[in-house]
Length: 307
Image (tube, rainbow, N blue to C red; front, top):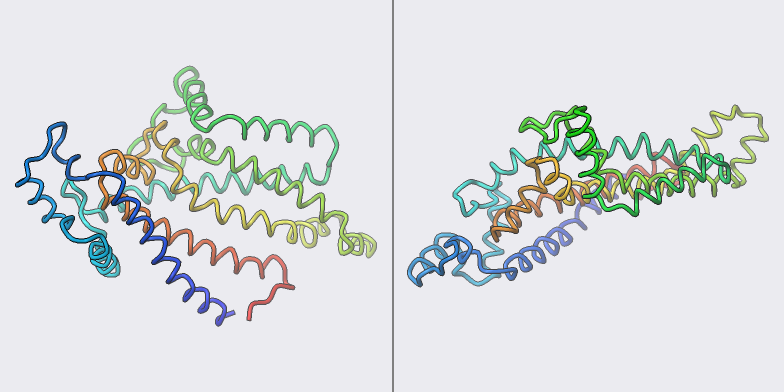
């Protein structure tokens, strides 16, 4: 196991460099950040040259990237064009988005897997058909429609929640936004769990466990569910990074100042340092979560061994 982890960590290095280089190049060609700093009027050449030199934009792109990566390893993600450190923006944005992601993942695990197990065990029955139809509706409706509808009903009309989340963004305030963020993924987790349960239910090892007279609950939890969760864990693991980076719509609807909000502002203002810094952290999150998911395979299925 230890050798496998070391090998995976070494494999992450070129992946991290390649992903950050690609993001850096894409962000640097998406527009002229200096023009955005000058507002509606064009910058005069002297001001443009001064700003370019101040933010290091007068150097070749490859040199800017090397300077950026050198600073990253010292914990310096640069300075936004408004003079604020990117690390300060991260310190306020990431805790909020992490709490929002935790709420969304809990919805996926608790509600999605539970519905998937129930419908997988009762395939073809009315409850199975009902859940399949509901998940299809959830997948078909865009997230911004679901968010605005819940905000209108629960916040404006019925007054059960605040229409906008406060700056503290506590877990209780993030329940509805977390549900909105997780809605599509929850539907996919339900359908994926259902398919996996229904397929493994007919496997020989399940028939053998039943023939040995094991209690039904033990057959489901110890034999059927553990093997059926491998594709589900893979999906949820990949979804963690996607939820953190893809929360732009949800955070805009509920006025949550998290990672999605900061990325949106950075792209809108062509603030390259902010965008590249936040995406760099998201790349690290993707890599770490994928490693954890691979290690969980051995926990779910004892037959899997890593050399």
